[in-house]
Image (cartoon, rainbow, N blue to C red; front, side, top):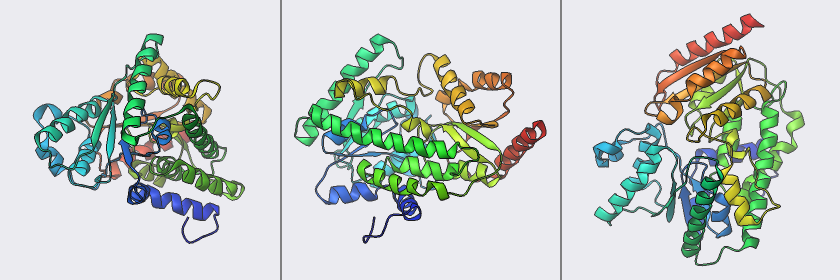
Length: 390
């Protein structure tokens, strides 16, 4: 908070919005005070280890309104078939918008992010003058089998060793426990936000929820927890929302565009299946286990994303969340080139039809939505379908 201002729900949310809009604010301040910053992709990287090392963790996001020309000039043909948000992040790395990063952890998730590690590593080797962070590749297998868990645990151990080297100090069990308590509190507070969003009637919009959740990835967790507590203190006075209850699933959403369009049609997004949304806080870390083992277990068995096998687990997870949120309809949104999401949509649609829950599928969507009217028309038709069935 600025200037000793008293924390209310309104001022807490204003501060949350400020960090959502100025995503490098806290990281630049940290680095300006002599700290080191670790960037990471996806929600598959254990923030707890980064925090326990005394480093600042920030998740990288793109800018749908930004340029991608430098990125596209520097990629070779086999790297060009990637989602536009990945091109956007690469462009920001190459043009200095992420010049405050000391290190970058790239996990083995979707292919476009996986390949980004190879591309950036080649760029660093070929042109040392580029101001690119030191890299670490966090490999993993995409199953929940026991053997996969053992492999992934060893990769987490390698990450821990690199973080210790970067920070110059050992990551102790006590430091890991402190970090786990902080992030578990954050997840618990975000689940309270999710419950208010899915209440009957809802009293938090999807647009508000996306800013609240995502901002936690750009700030110190302790500071975000303070803001969440202040925001939730006034929950009993939040105005209720009317309209059709919708669920959104699909490609990573690091901007508000789609949610704003959907809710401008009179609906409320009561829940989502997205790595920038509810999925981020679904699974806490088990504090009864050894801290390192607990972190490895949580990230191996966290809420499944589209890269995970078997697909049946993804389907069950998505349907359970839809039913628990009492969603009346579902919006699937998939970016162009996002093969990771496309392959599971048919089974999801079929399962929804069996439960008589209507859906709409936005396929091959651009990262920057310049023509919202077709989407609004489809959302309007979905809402009319739901209303006729009531």
